[in-house]
Structure formats: structure tokens, C-alpha cells
Amino acid sequence: MNDSPEDRTAKWLVGDRLSCVLHLGDGSLAYQLAEQGHEVVVAGDDVTSRRHPDIQYVRSAGERLPFIGDAFDVVIAPELREAPTALAEYARVLRPEGLLSTISQRHDDSIPWMRKLREIIGVVDRGAPLADTFSASGLFHPPETHEIGSWEKLDLPGLLRFAQATKHPSVGEAALSQVRDLFMTYGGQTGFLRLRHETSCLRATVDKSSLGQAAPPPDTMLLDFR
Image (cartoon, rainbow, N blue to C red; front, side, top):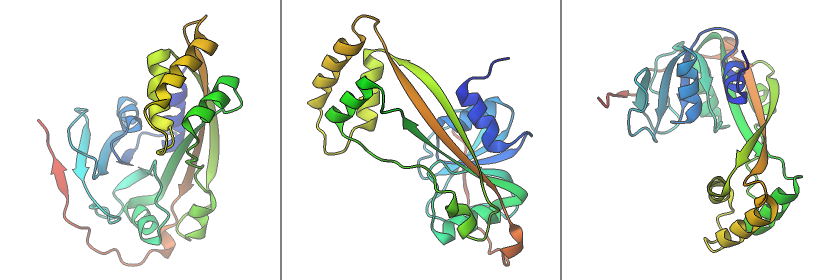
């Protein structure tokens, strides 16, 4: 069976076993993990609705996580918070030998049409997750890294959505007319452009030995949107 790049990414982030996963933020990766059979909890201040029948949703805010210690096999933090308090919270809710995982995505700017697009919409450097964030905390063992490349076909509506999502905040909506012209120049014959994604994944095993007595977690708001 040929897994998609998204499936391979999800499997690598959690390891080779079915796990209880805390996904921070309401993102598509959480739904992929649920479809793969993992027990998934989504937590964050962006939780507003129930979008999957097999996922539990918890509304939380701030760096303190509203869960008891040793609750999860894996914590996935797509936007990894590097503050010591946040890292300590990730470690606290992980079970011994549990994994903290994070992910970032870049796009191959060496492709001619991508270079031209960046001239139009600017560049927002989201950066890759830093490996030393884990080990410098003293709460995690040295991380493993994994790179996955994949291609996506973009039609004109898809290119406009991509440009809107990745443009620099200082670039106005008027630039989208130039994006349409770019599509006709580079993709007018085929009806699509090919975009290369470069996904960087990191995961690190928790080291519980340096954790002190866990404080009681804050109150939890478990949301049932039925």
C-alpha cells in the first residue's frame, strides 16, 4: 500500500504504535491521526466546534495544559513554544518514554514560478524547528529529524489560496491580480503549476528524571458539540 506523504509524516511523528495523542491546535494532522486509529485529544484556544466524532476537544489557553501528568504517549505541537514553562508542561503530561513532536513546512523557492511569486507576494520565513530547543531544556533526549518531500498540483484557485495564505502581511490584495498573470504565463498551457513541499519533522523522547513534583492542572473545559 502506498501511503501519501501526509500519512507518512503522521506515522513518523507518533512512532510505530497506536498512541494516545495530544494535538495542540485544531489542525488537519489531528484528523489524519484519528483516521489511523490513534486516540486523539485536540486542545487549544482555537477549539470552537466538534469536527470529528472520534476526537475529544478541550478548550485551553496559556502555557499550562489542563491535564494530569503522564496522560499522553505523544504531544504534537505544530507551533512549538520554546519557553521553559511550555516545555515543562509538554514533559509533565507525557508518559515515560513519550514523544514530543513538531513539524514545519517550507516550499521549494528554486522553481522559476515560485521565485517570481515571491517577488510579488514577499517572503514570510517561518523557519524550521530548532533541534537544540529540545536538548537545551534538559527535559528531552536529543531529537531525531526526518525530511519528507512531496509535489502538489495547483490550479488557478489553488494558487490564489496559496498566495493568500503565504503572502507577507505588508502585501495588499491588489497583488493577487499579478498572481493570476503569473499563472497564465507559467501554467496557462497545462492548467496547473507544480509546487514542491519540504516538510521537516522533529521528535524527542521525554526525560522525566529532571521533573519535580507536578502541580495540579488547571480546570479543564471538555467540549461536546453534539
